[in-house]
Image (cartoon, rainbow, N blue to C red; front, side, top):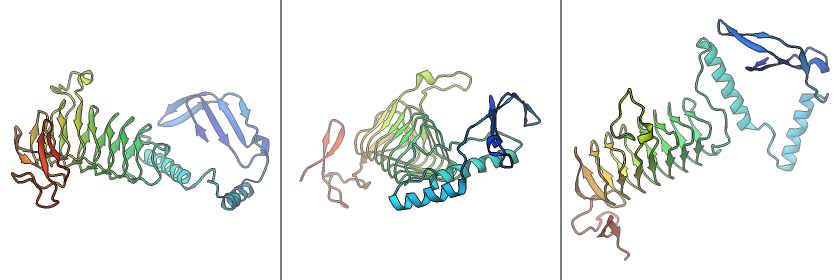
Length: 295
């Protein structure tokens, strides 16, 4: 029996073929967390008479012979198990509604989402991306390829994240924040999207966009105030509070933040001559901060 808010479908395999699947158009009333239907007359659903198990086996053999994808493949089976698991969990908790999305359409098959994580409908997950325990990807967000999203991370709604990003545990990436490719967000670092929030006043129409450019590192427990840009390969030290734009390759620390030097693309602090002692890259100053010299 499948009960909706306007109809109920009843499948009874003990009935003759014409009465196996019936639809009832009716009203549903809930009493003690149980659906109580006021049934209308049954509507017969016409189904071609055949042996279901035989058809399944023939379809399976045909897929093997012709290299076709089955109508219900392993991914579909996984979605069914997820539905049953959430339904059982809801039943165990007295019928409480639980967050769930069974749609696999916007998640690449080679990505990995932990069973405790929630990915909303219309959220896109790139290939090779891993999403770990208790994280939540909200609707409209788009995560690129080969990202690593740690535990208890919230992303969205409508947040774009590039390829090869790493977001450590306990980070929230709010609407208005954009992460380009290769951004590192350390554990428990903080983004804001409203400059002067109040709990009793809704201010989502005052969201200030924040952009973190390619390759930047945001250290553990740092705070990025909304409305600014973090430059390419900039390095924000742990615990820093950043309320102004940061130049490309700038190394900043403190509260309020101050620049104490420059960082190489490989993450090492650059000496005064701007030639990295680890990877041999050489830089020169520009209006945006540093740019690499072409040797």
